[in-house]
Image 1 (tube, rainbow, N blue to C red):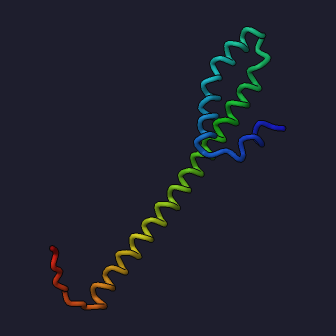
Image 2 (image 1 turned 180 degrees about the vertical axis):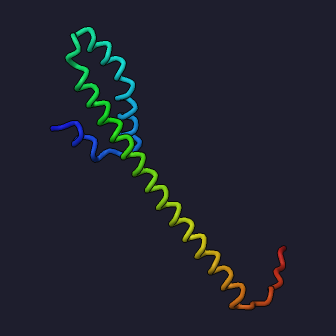
Image 3 (image 1 turned 180 degrees about the horizontal axis):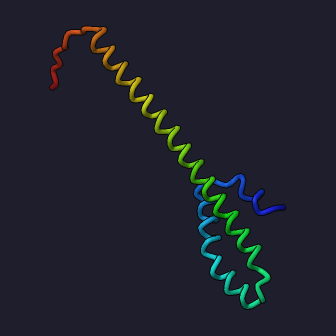
Amino acid sequence: MEFEALLLGLEPMTAAVIGVGALVLVPVVSALDSATGHNVSESARSAAKTGLIWTFDAIDKAQSTFAEASESFKDLVAEAKAERSTSKNGTSESPREVTIG
């Protein structure tokens, strides 16, 4: 099973952490690569690039989700304001006296 298939179902923050982790491992793999005769560098570069791509995709997905949630909240606020102004203007109830005590 490919590494990409494992990450497809992850939350955006988890994918971002994995992407950052891949970036942190690049110097380690580079040092290991020079010790082993430069056999690991191409696969490490490919893995780091894939991690970055997943991170960017996860960030885009998180931004999209946040934008949709923000828009829904703004719509809800607008509806509440409209309903409030309609109830103020539409039904002119006189104030009632309330006695406490």
